[in-house]
Image (cartoon, rainbow, N blue to C red):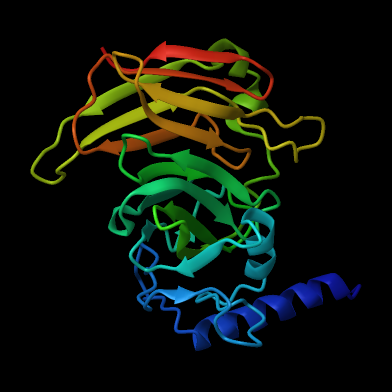
Length: 287
């Protein structure tokens, strides 16, 4: 048997992070199907001097590096349990991990960034709500068990960071999707389907679901370059922008997004955008 120092170090790092996460008060309920959101009060990142995790409630040692990579040097950031993040406790399909978030409690939100600590490509998407609520439902690829971050930039120019932890067997970023594997993706590329759902007794807002056919290749599969949608803009009947979305490679194949609105947009709603190869998206989502 060959001894792998890399595997040994990986296990040691995981064990240390788990210990730190438990000490920090992370909570996992046995038998629960959803991750339990953190309930700690809002706290500034890195508030504890000498903490190698930068004050992360989940105890991830990747967080300080991510903070430096994705936020300006002078940006103020706080962990904020008011941001609701719902994920599976365990990702059964690492290529299609569902996540929903709602940052409405923060107030007016300028931009939202979704990050995954241990993915080879950490940034999942950017979302500018415009006239939509600062809430979104979608699926993404997960390479291994990892924290997920929902960072919302408020009118106070502070990044409010919601969080959850997802266990996974992994491998979601480094295997080809179904349409890439069977070669069918050119026949459906950038086709759009959508439906508007009115408010009801269970939900006080209107919901728009939009799906775009696209392989969303990460570029991490041998012989398959990165190929993904990089911009999506929702517009109402008068071409007023309802929301802007900037997906990255980790978003799942044939992405499906759910947008919420306080008031039903004036239809028909259209979607325009493009992928990183310049292929255009231009379609009516609803009549």
